Image (cartoon, rainbow, N blue to C red):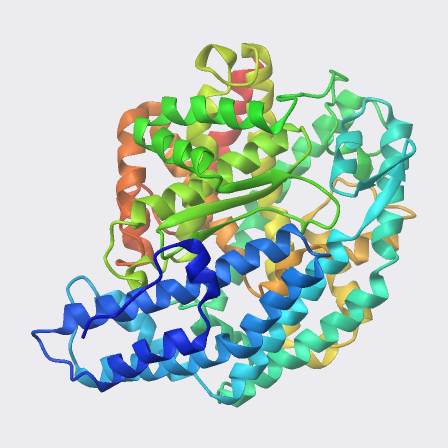
Amino acid sequence: MIYIYPKTTGELLSWDWEKLEPIVSGLLATSIDSGNISEWVQNWSDFCRVVDEKYSRLYVDKTAYTADHDIEERFLFFLDHIYPKYLAADQKLKEKLLASGLVPENFELPLKKLKAEADLFRSENIALQTEEEKLNQEYDRIISAQTVVWEGAEITTTELRKVYLDIKREEREQAWRQAASRQLSDRQMINDLWQKQLNLRLKMAANADRPDYRTFRWQQLKRFDYTPEDCKRFGEAIEKKVVPAALKIYQRRQKRMGVDSLRPWDLLVDPLKRAPLRPFGNVEELTQKCRQIFHQVDPQLGAYFDTLQKEGLMDLENRKNKAPGAYCTPFAFVRKPFVFCNVVGLHDDVQTLLHESGHAFHDFECSQLPYIQQASIPMEFAEVASMGMELLASAYLDSESGGFYSTPDAGRALVEHLEGLITFWPYMAVVDAFQHWVYENPQKAIDPAECDACWERLWDRFMPGQDWTGLEEEKKTGWQRKLHILTLPFYYIEYGVAQLGAVQVWRNALEDQEKAVKEYRNALSLGGTVSLPQLFEAAGARFSFSESLLAQAVNWIEEKIEQIEK
């Protein structure tokens, strides 16, 4: 049977379920055998790509313009009238393939993932998944509307980050307190939203006959290679091996700044009172210099970035009513990615674009895989692609390589980044441990006050060296400002594990950059066709939660910092 698919993006966006349903009917009516299995899966894959890209494009629009009513209505129409029918149809197609007993070439692991999804599926959860998407959208809307008046102009709390680099401490404190006050004004709204989200997730787990939401989510995320206990052991290893190293960084910062204690507004400013790094004046300069860096790392990666630029596949500037954060999402049907950021002129923006471009390169490398199911990338390795790119690109930050800085400032930027690797692991441990507590104790976690208390306990355990005296309310509500907790439950351990993998890739690059990049690209091209340990191995790293490997990574980072500062 010949299936007709949209020819243009406009046509794709105009397709409703009436255009899609005949494809489903044809696939369900076709008998599968060894002679047509590849063709059948290819057509199913193309059907999924159409729906996936339609969702992604609508999602990009609604995060780019959260206050646009027409965009919101189009997204909600998709959630209400197309997405539920797609989920039900996709389940029938999974069941048909699984019942055939046939396995297309290089499809063993994707088939295992499909089996896990099919086993978890319950029709009564379709409406709940739609509702969850709407609640997530509500969180984006709350956060993206948070603005303050600074020096007579209304700006977003994201843009206010620039002031945190000001060498005048009183300016930083005023900006920080103003942002915190604005964020706290939404505390009750987020508390109410949280209770709805938690109840919804518990109901989905019960509908799927799982003993708790964590078990449900573990299967939903297809985590075959590690357990919740591994995550807890990783947190303990971070407490032993990384927290002391992070404390040294904070103490060194405090000493250099000459302050009695390190306050939250002291964490981003240069401790030696050097002027803030201002790597670019506008988005065009940012993208052009990143382009030059990527071409230095690898000509093909540079060519991928050229495509993002030429085809308008990036939305980078921060603005009011734009959702917070950054992401890369695939446009699955055209097999090209889209990068979303909120840049305001900081070095952190450079790191963010390098990071999200790493995800984009992953999508480009996977695009040669025939089936969308093979490109289902485990996030633990997807983050190696992004974090690894930040480090691989660090060798070219200086202006002599086409980058942003003089050689001393390039070294300064790298030291900031490497210190950030060490201080990030304890923060990651707070976020991950908080989520385990929530879903082990849902009857307590439904009370936002209990969540506040848990976050505060974990913060004090993993984040010593910061003085939050008099800022107890701001500290304990930190969980509300971590979007993963609200909208992507249990998605955070990936960053910690992937950072350990990325540091190993970077360590290899210090010895042989060309070989490390070759291994990196090869691993990216595998998509989701092999296990996590195999993906890490292909990239020249080990997938491990071990205390010894973590200690090695911290030592490598500390040695490099010392070398640069000398």
